[in-house]
Every structure is written in structure tokens, then in C-alpha cells.
Length: 401
Image (cartoon, rainbow, N blue to C red; front, side, top):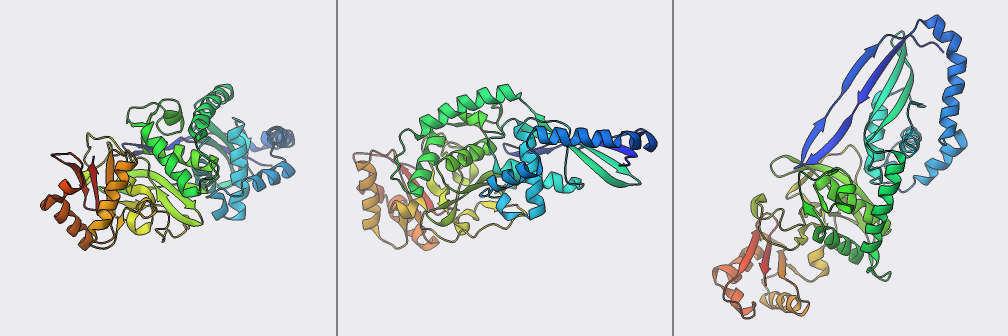
């Protein structure tokens, strides 16, 4: 095999959603290769070495086929071409083995970059990956070989030990989750568990992966979303990491999940009421904002914008939306339902009541009755004042008991 030129491409590409900004690096270095005659003399020996390196980590044809089958059910994997799937299985195997300088079956650098991102998006357990480097051999301007190395932030042994610590977090999380719960109830539990046990912190170490949440309890949106993905998958819930922007154009990450047969969204970062409240301003209040648990496209599009090149399923049902499942979704001018919501909250020992309206007209009615006319005094037991958050974009009112 003739290789006249070697180009080493360091694609240290990371999507850093901290605060949540995007940082990308792409450094390219050109190195003159040996003359083609010398390369020809060594090509047979190098091919055998390349094949041995692939087989050593499980990239023989039979093992690769088995690895591809094992990837079935991965959200991105299930939506890409057969050619991309083969490369996906290769990259996943390389990364899981902390392997270096492995020859790929693909000669397409752009395909490798695209599929690498699919692998990372499907596998939050790859917390020790922060990009990759790739060596490209060319002859007469044609690519003859690509060699791939992951950028590993931790050694294989360090990764194993950290995984054991994170397994302890997972076990603690699930020890109080009954097997009899349906998928909505499990997702709600995970949503609440993450929010109550994680602080939003742009300075948190490892905030682009699950270590920040599971080991340190501090992260940003990327860490929240990957942790939610990891736990949802552990609970047997089909899900995905998705990203895009929120109001103001800020990059952001959240989750898509399938509950009881219907697709919907979860955003645990925005579910933290102390992180984001009225018009995006920080609130010094505790609690959980349930607007982002089980939301459909219409609800989510009020504040979030997806950016993806994959075909995503429609989220067109409110069946597993928190407010619908809990009876807090107000579709008519009905104060008796409002009374029921407050009574149930007191019975359950809740710290707050959240009511979402199905239309702007109903929302205006609710605000007028409870706030303008001070009707809250009929529902807040023994209280002489009210603390509340109005979320006009979401048509939601949160009252603290």
C-alpha cells in the first residue's frame, strides 16, 4: 500500500456546555512522510501489525459484528446508515479499550468526526473521553488510511475505579425505587433525585460528564443531561441526549425520553427552581420546577430550540406531562380544581404548589383570581403573605406554602 504523505489531525473537539458556552479546537499539523518506495517495502509488515492491533481490542470481523448487534437500541445508532453503524462500533470499541493509533475501516475524516459525536451522545459512561486525534495517510492527494486515538482524560484503571464509585451513587438512587412503578413514575423520581442532589456550578470539575454529578454533586447542563441519560437507561427507559439553544441563544443540553410508549422531554437543569425562574433570572428559592418533566414539543419550544441532524420522533402527547399526571393542568376557569391542587399539596407535605394553564386565557384568569384579587388567602392555610413565581412564557404559577 502506497502512503506518500502523513497528516496528523488533532481534533480535540469538545462540546462544553458550561454556562453553557461552546468551545471547539481543531489543530492541524502536516508532517512529511517517508518516500513511497520505503513505504512499499514496509507495507505488508505494517498491514499485519495494524490487523493485529485491531484484533487485540476486539475488532476482528466477527467481533465487530457482535459489537454492532450490541449497539442496537442506542438512540443515535438506530438512526444512522449501515456504513456509519460499522464505524460507530469500531470507535466505541477503541474508546472503551483506551486504545491508541488504531487503523479505521473508513477513509472519511468527516464521517469519523460525525460518528464520534454519535457515540459520545449515546454513551454517557464514556466520561473519560475529551475528543480524539487522527492520523491521515494520503497518496497523490487521496486518503489511503486513517488512524484513530481517543483523547483520554483518565487511565483505564482510574476509569474503572471511578466507575465503581459512580455505581454506588446509582445503587443509592435506585434502592428506593419500586419495580412496580410505571416509566413516568421512575422518570419523575430520577428528575427529583438529580435536582435535589446536584447544585448548578459553572466552576465544577468534570462538568461536561457524569463524574461531576455522581461524585461531586455539582455540574452544568451537560453534566445534568448526561447523568439523567445514564440513570434513565439504567431504569430501562429509552432516552437520548439532545442539545440546542434556549432563550437568548445560549447553548444548552437536555433529554428526550420515551415514557409508556410516548416521547417527551426532560430538562433537569431547568427543573432546579433555584437555577432559573422568571424571565431566566436566578431565584433564591428552593424546590423543583416541573415544567420540564414530560413536556411535549409545544411546551418545550416556548423556551428551547433543538439543533440536530438526526430525525427525531414527534413529542405530541401530554399523557406523561407532570401537570397532567398530577392533576395540576388547568384547562378551564375552574377554581374548584385549584382548591383540590392546594389541598393535595398540603396532604403530601409539599413545600410548593405548581399550576400550569392550558391557554393564555386560563392563565390570565388564574393570575387575576389568586394574585390580583388576593384569592390566595383562601388556599394558603394560616399564611398572611404569599411567595410566588409567575412563569409567563410557560403559563405556570408556583406558590410556596
